[in-house]
Image 1 (tube, rainbow, N blue to C red):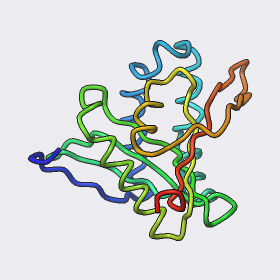
Image 2: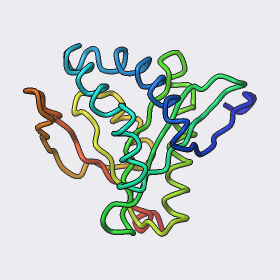
Image 3: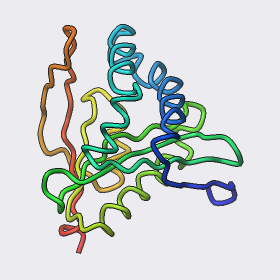
Length: 172
């Protein structure tokens, strides 16, 4: 990413369709070996409709970051405080398939980590499918697996996840 002209910026609720567009391009490739096509469609429709994204911004106080290279929007992330202002959640982090493992995800993750720390977080956590290769990515960035959880998301589908966390207090 050193010589590539990229930009990360926060987006407004009116720009949430940009997030949805990236998600719809990313999910089928990213999750094809983990969950069924039906579950992918169900989760995209449930989690990336206008109301769900706006609620995440409003109720969960999530801030969305969009990463662009030249004029192409290629990735996004969102994070925000949990019920405890000192603990943030990384809600989402997705990069278009052709740019995964290029450093774009690291840029977005570092942006969220900086944002959380600057807003008083002492810890940040995330959920990741237990079969997702992104677990290695998060471990390389200092996250540890805290526990396993299963979430009933409706329509007969379950999310079988690890909860991973990162703490600045353990970093010295």
